[in-house]
Length: 318
Image (cartoon, rainbow, N blue to C red):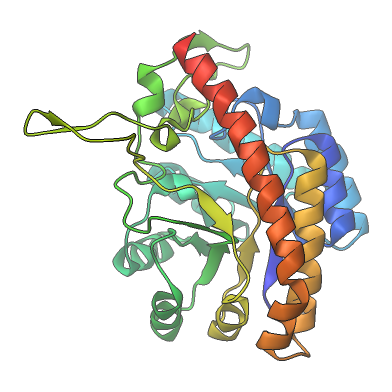
């Protein structure tokens, strides 16, 4: 059965998405996820969340998708052990070596291959599955036929974002981009020995979304008219949900750790109703029933994105 997995960018968001119908909540912890500290939880907040989720029969996933140095891997394993002891049932990981180590030390834990791994094709899905991954996040450019083909050949869980980029052939691949580091950088060690590198999403900092800012472009010494985006902005979607459920997708992933608590809660509630209705109603009826509400959510999403992008651009220039 397809599960709904939602973000907990703040303590309030994490608790509210569970109440809104999420089966699983995923959270970043400071210094170890591909977001800034304002969208990550403290260890104490993770412990409280685990207790609440367990009481509801739901699950917590912790995002550990930075690329740790060799000296940081033992610290990462210590973190996994602590979180698992609190009731965390799975982790989102990008680094191959860390994934192998976590699987070796915790054979029964659920491991999600994070978007930070930057998968490109079905062969990589097979590769990560053979390393011990339980669930693999599919990149935006892979569609329903890819899902069906993978499910026919591999007994692996698949995770699909509930948003689509407008440009499926974008030249920027999430997880393999280092552009933010050229715009903002600050490095320090915490008291546990974690090496922070603000400005690099791969090292516990934050992605500044520079791919979504308009760029001036020159071809053969001629300036192109207008500003060029390196990657399209994603949009929430609805029409294909039934096909993905029938194809065997295991997790629909709601984005938005950096959005408002209220917007993410409403998105989760929306998709909870849609997914439940698709179990007993024809797709066309469900699409018609929820399309207007989806359009309103898209407007709110775009409005918050513009405000967020303005802040990020100002931070990069500053």
